[in-house]
Image (tube, rainbow, N blue to C red; front, top):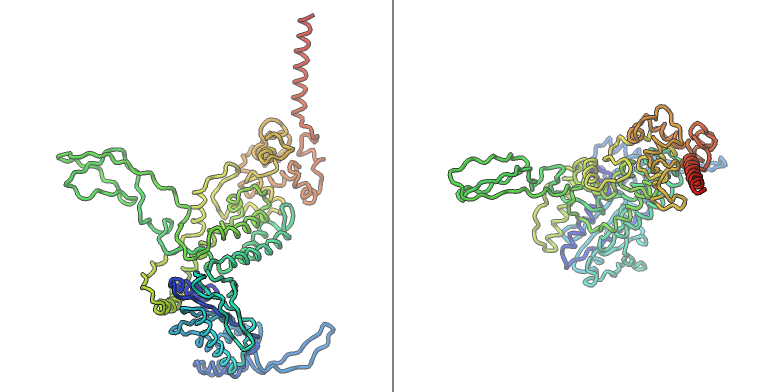
Length: 618
């Protein structure tokens, strides 16, 4: 199945999982899978046998000559670091490593092996990808399945003798699939050789995905979480909140390396949407009521069925009737709440609580990329980094897989296997699935989900847009981190620190005493700091939403020294100490000037009252 147009590991896994789930529908049948292991697959190809197989398949003579020359008359030497080189030795078998033809020729070479395993009439099918071979069988007992697999193994050994392939039975993996533990013997072993008795396992890895007897996908989620955690460790070593790779570079590493590592083949194990109409892509089958004027609708017993108002049909005005028999006021029902995105049923048994383990990986990655505080809402970080929620991404990826080009051809292959399973298990004929629809753009789904959620009271709350990445284009890590903190208002200013109950901030007011220590006050009104001319007289949204001003705002905010988190970054980036900068600070003393003036005023007022009181008493 592998290395062909519109065929991937997801195609092979989809075929395997669909057959197992079809067997699950019959309570009297159990499925078993035997994963084969080929030792030195590409190095064991016999060139003469390969040319003979291609000749039988009808390839032209000129191509056979090319393949014969390509795979024969090869030699190799070993070059040591000291400069010594071994003797030239001829290679009489195998295919050249690193060539694009390597996998294609090997698929043609072992195509007859897959045909041996494809026996739908006796309940056996093959699932393979390149040199990865798996045999699936089903019957009324696991013992019968093991007997069938033993016979397939013997046929595979006979084929291997003719083609020069070597199997490694000690590396085989056996697993039984059933959701009824007590009905079947899930511990039934298989006898491969006189000395090898293979016991079934509870977890088996097939094409990078871990399968369990119930297809609950919990082992795979656990393995994916472990793999993603290791990848996040590498991302953490690359960047922190004030140093390291830039915002855009860190984001690219996550999207290209980290996220694919734990979402491999998620179209198979993540919740998959059923092909039902979506309110975002097709007209809703249940039209919502349109706004109606508050006047009575007149109807008589002789009138036909009542008129049903819809979004597409205008409401007719009432016409005068000769006799009014009944007058009923009609009030439109309240519209339903907006859908976040099409919450369609799913094929899989993956629970939402299981998928939450992977959500934590993305949440950690978003904080590493952005340099934001842990208290920053994930919803805000997803919009700032323009990375959609993981659950929505998996949902959309599964939906898009079923609308990808070539899906109809893949469905025909899968339906052939499923028809034989229904015949052998004597299942009732099921109705054909509804046609698939094209998914709407991912950004539309994300925007719909965003609008349905409560808005953040702090920060700049704008719907997700790719234009936000332009703000971080020319910023180093410290500047991008402080920009995100300013935009989300989760930053080391008195208001936020007081909300988080930091001991040194008993009050939310700024040191100047004029207002609370908000981002707007810090950027535009606090008298402690001088501002460049380009930043004066502008509102918070204008300062933090312009790519031209973002660089100036972040540089100024770091230089002020108001955020001690960025003191080291200030000295490294701009080369001076914040505490001696008189251009930005109106007062470098730790005790605020306003508090000194206020204390002087109170002292003078109190002294005046005492002086007047003494004069009156004396």
